[in-house]
Image 1: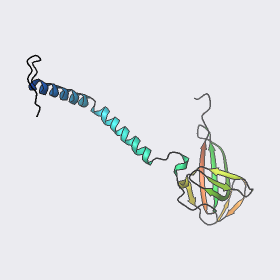
Image 2 (image 1 turned 135 degrees about the vertical axis):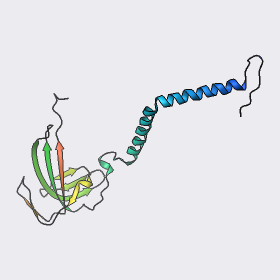
Image 3 (image 1 turned 45 degrees about the vertical axis):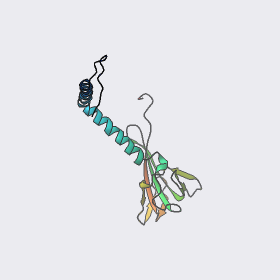
Image 4 (image 1 turned 90 degrees about the vertical axis):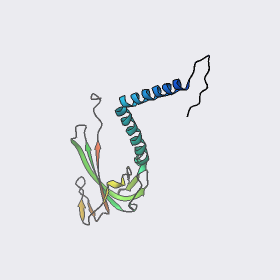
Length: 161
């Protein structure tokens, strides 16, 4: 309950305060009713952004290895595509995983060179037992532990940007 003293100089009364508060409430109500959809979308966007920041990867380092691939043999298939989606080249390599971290995984190839991949471990699949012939080199890999395939998209031509 609002207690307001009457002042002869200002002619101030509790009723005018109540009317003023009611007018402000009506203005606020009118604003929200006019902009309800916009406010709802804005609120939803803020919630989605907060949810996304909490759950989404922050980069390549976000995915933790869920499978013990270090020391295992892996076959990697890479397809390079141009900006229109046409295949430019394909190649396969294999080797032993020498490092598997949240930042990268490194494959030591038989020739001693390393090949590094981003740590998308969900893209690594157990390989079925058997012989795998690499089309690009003709090499045969017997009973690899894992396989992974990658599509590499070339950037758009400079005149397209």
